[in-house]
Length: 204
Length: 103
Image (cartoon, rainbow over all chains, first blue to last red; front, side, top):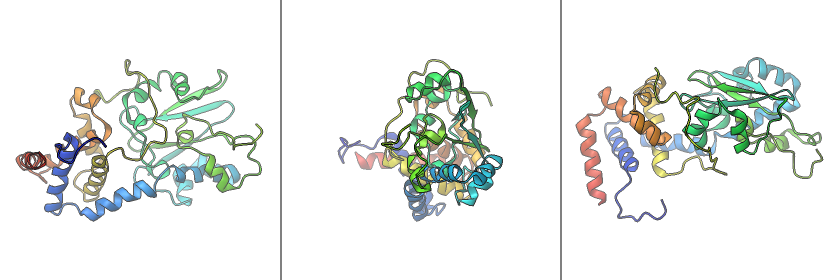
């Protein structure tokens, strides 16, 4: 939108949200400062870094991992990442035999407290339509090739229940600290569309 | 409810095209839609199920051609008018006023 001049009429959604927000503020139905605070929280505090800390903890602490797989909601709360759209969490583990990938075919259900707000592709029709019928083909579009002898499980999220993928810890990370491990874990690895790449310079 | 939003297995949508290093929001209006939706939700003006249902009530053409935050915007407009928080005419008048001002 950088080409838009200041005198051009606002685009339709731009105008519609201005109309809605201004009316709600005038009627004191919402507080504009609360709106700003909410936006800032989701832009700066809630994001995939939270989920990466969960994954790294599970990699270094087998007891934590056990709790995480047994009751995801409770174990995630131990690290403080609870809240809206993360009320009921199930963590699914990738292994040499199974690769998990998460979708929401009906809308865009996603675990906000651990991954932040979902990327556009997760919310758009192509991923939602296709990952359930051709998961291996879809994963290839993300550059992720799943070997034929590995089972692919697709988990369809819903309004009440959200999934987080526990990716496999890459080889060559034996000497890494928990924090260094968290740095390796991408958002896509926790959705299941990517694997966690080994650190630069590590021998696989 | 069965409807166009039930996308699992539907054919014809083409490639996924993930965007590298995608920002949380792409436009200022998306930020405002998100913040206003959450604030109005926090104020008890609708619940999550009503919000999702209002998106599912969108026409198929609008649903498929509009983006995520446009869905949110449409849902908020529907629910806030339906529950009487905002008058339909009042909303239309404000949109017209803002459009006129900007021109």
